[in-house]
Image 1 (cartoon, rainbow, N blue to C red):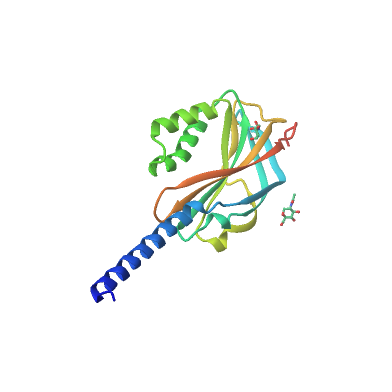
Image 2 (image 1 turned 135 degrees about the vertical axis):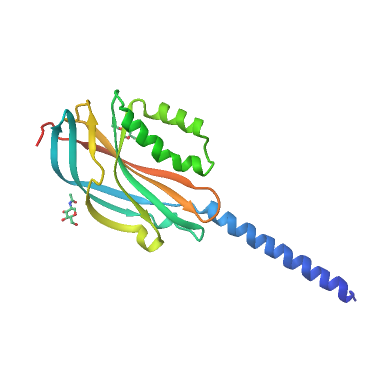
Amino acid sequence: MHSFGFRANALLTFSVTILALICAMASLSDNLNSPSPSAHVQVANINRFQKSRGNDEVSLTLNVSANLQSLFTWNTKQVFVFLAAEYESPKNSLNQLAAIFHSYNCDCASGVLSRAQVALDCILAFVFFSVVSLWDAIIPSKEQAQFLIQTKNKYRFTDQGTNLQGKEYNLTLHWHVMPKTGKMFADKIVMTGFRLPEAYR
Ligand SMILES: *[C@@H]1O[C@H](CO)[C@@H](O)[C@H](O)[C@H]1NC(C)=O
Ligand SMILES: *[C@@H]1O[C@H](CO)[C@@H](O)[C@H](O)[C@H]1NC(C)=O
């Protein structure tokens, strides 16, 4: 027969092992969660497409539907989403670069990338592309992560100098998942094959 002390010790070891296992599983489950978000965007209307003060400016009405519920786990605080129009343009304005740096600052804060790396990535990725943020939102809960909205572009879709007539563009839904603990992560869905009208209206 084992002594009481031996049994107590065995029980304690067993409990601590189980506890450690549960902790490991909890933090792993967050990493193992492979999200499968979906998004669909339609341009319901081009309200206005004009040259104003030398710059092409577009006003769109967008139908945005998305299901980002799978991004939410027990460890998710909130999700920041933004929809951007991305198109090729050899002449990048400083404004656009500033906007890109601004949107990537979130990643720097989480320590995922150093500022220098981000700067380099931005320059490599965006020298021949313009990225214009059209709409954004903060999704605070899983219940609100499935939505269907109709919205006009919240931010100006304008391009300094570049002619946007007949321009092909992609609409990209970007998201940043802000966890309660741990690293922030970001990803996107690219929707291709959009084109602006040939003529101003
Ligand atoms: C956009 O949504 C509105 C309202 O839900 C709907 O009436 C319209 O047909 C949609 N447009 C497109 C292009 O899907
Ligand atoms: C749109 O996205 C596709 C796929 O990622 C890419 O190959 C293409 O260059 C993009 N087009 C524009 C105009 O940004």
